[in-house]
Length: 295
Ligand SMILES: C[S@@+](CC[C@H](N)C(=O)[O-])C[C@H]1O[C@@H](n2cnc3c(N)ncnc32)[C@H](O)[C@@H]1O
Image 1 (cartoon, helix red, strand yellow):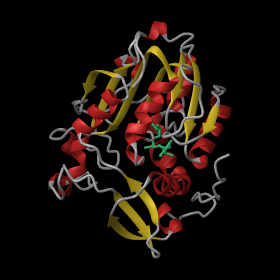
Image 2 (cartoon, helix red, strand yellow):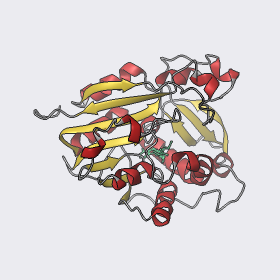
Image 3 (cartoon, helix red, strand yellow):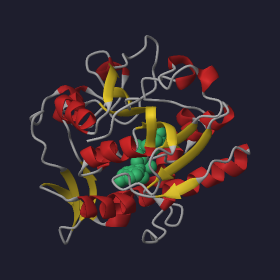
Image 4 (cartoon, helix red, strand yellow):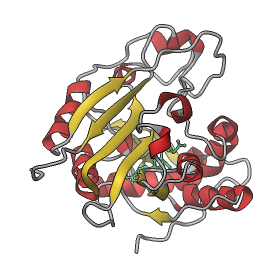
């Protein structure tokens, strides 16, 4: 059983942000291992869950598969394959948050399991399941060690879940490869690696390079005792490709969605102004070979 997280949500402490709840006092740049990253990020997403859904819930939709702030919907993009063929597919949603994507897939006839590290995020998934009447099994787990049997899914996917928050992204690729059946598909959206160079500012300050693209030292927010309260891990584009290939997967496409004309919604550091100049999202479309054994 994963450790039970305390109720750090702002609803339990109205008006208090995740940073204040967790006692964040600053940012450090230093190595952080898998266990420390998971501990910090579980508490952070628990504390931020209500704010996240207050801010983004409407855009995410309760039963909708939104890949990214650029507005790409699976209903239009078909990155998981022909929608007519989703019926009966066993799908794993990684880092599901409120599992809106998983519920949309369930309405297409897929058999979905959704998992997340954070009980606070999964609580939103449970509430939305009740509200919409679309239920998918929810599991609390970390993405570096999946509690699922080999070959148990046809498709795995995530819109911004888990990948940027784990110390060992290569382990996530290996685990997903393991739980996919031969011929299965893995599609994941992450913040575009280029974004690492810039501050998280949707305005002009977010156009100024503040650090090296090649600096993989984690971004770590810390409390007064130096304990991590939030961790983000950067990988370059070639790191991502290498992790995918090393897991025995085939990279079929990388989608860099462009900011659509007329789209005005801002989302964190995503904005029309930055979107016109910089890629914000990278979506990696992978498959597991039909034959052969994994490395
Ligand atoms: C930006 S949110 C995205 C949530 C959801 N996919 C969406 O589209 O709203 C990132 C999610 O990744 C989850 N997460 C972070 N680290 C994780 C890990 N190691 N394993 C599984 N989930 C993780 C967080 O709890 C959070 O729900």
